[in-house]
Image 1 (tube, helix red, strand yellow):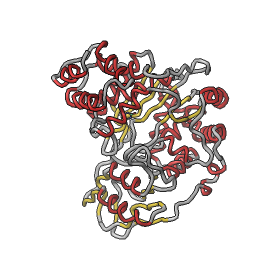
Image 2 (cartoon, helix red, strand yellow):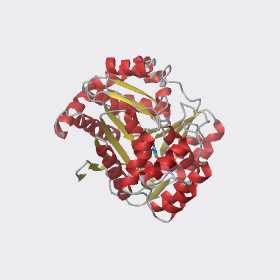
Image 3 (cartoon, rainbow, N blue to C red):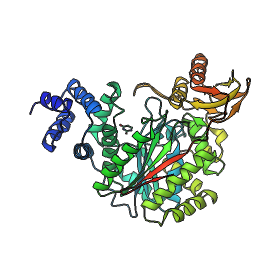
Image 4 (cartoon, helix red, strand yellow):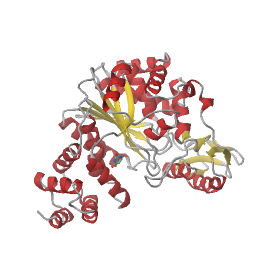
Length: 440
Ligand code: URA
């Protein structure tokens, strides 16, 4: 079999069979297929797409390209949660303890941020002492004991995705529905949970900018999960506006803690309650109304906050910073962004807001870059808000004075200010299950 023929078949709109796909993925992982040929294949997929069957075969090959975690030694129903990525998306820090406080087992492997989106593992690492690299046995013990553990992708999990994602990232082939579905679901199937909740972000800060594309991605992933025998639900949620007010690692942990103390921003709290209720639903804890009632109670009673503290302590983190958020390390440079405009904010290009935070040091451009955990932006005004000249729009945090002006310019570029108040945006657009799409 020649790689050249597989590339031209895909370029011409053909579909690869199982044998061909196996040759492609296994050959690439072994280093027998060079990056330049795989790049050409990925670009052909970007333009031609893949059939449902090709996507399912490729996902299975990616999932089995390394270790597949067997979570069966942990009793109870294990539910995974995955977000397709966004700006200010600290939902895992809130949703996982909410679900665990209600008895769902959360044995989760999360990712790091790349590009304009943040990653849960980086956020967790902003808690002093927090370990996110934990051996399998201890990981299991922590989940057995506390019901929750969130770590980085460990061991030899989906090496095919690691190589493919790194290549896609530098060849402009990330934004492909079948390739995103393969990448996410390959990891989810390898991670071994019984059920999967997907948070598919849509809008200017997400990989998918339109609800239509997000729905297609959600349906593709739900179908892959269900075919693999895992109960799977996807929510399509708004990423046309940063979620909550804080962007940046420790700033997001602080906001997550405030939310777990039931005094977080309304948008973040509502999305998290809905996501957590769906995790309970997947775990078979009743209908959606019952599940929502349970997670709301876990939030209001402080049980979810307690669960988060337990998790932090079990993973070696200093929980005193959670109990007293003023103990988080502070940025040495703090600067307000003052409004040069009068009017209503009608749009915030969320990706640009994420990039502004990265300029301050909150994200990395390449995998090797280090992160400034205290850097980021706290929004004081968001889409729909009335602003006057001189109002504080946001506060920037960082440790490099010279980054403040470029970040401010980047942030102001992200805003559209007009004379009329825009319509209120939906927070959740739809819920996608194996057999239905419920529009919200
Ligand atoms: N997140 C992933 O894990 N993979 C993608 O391809 C896109 C987002």
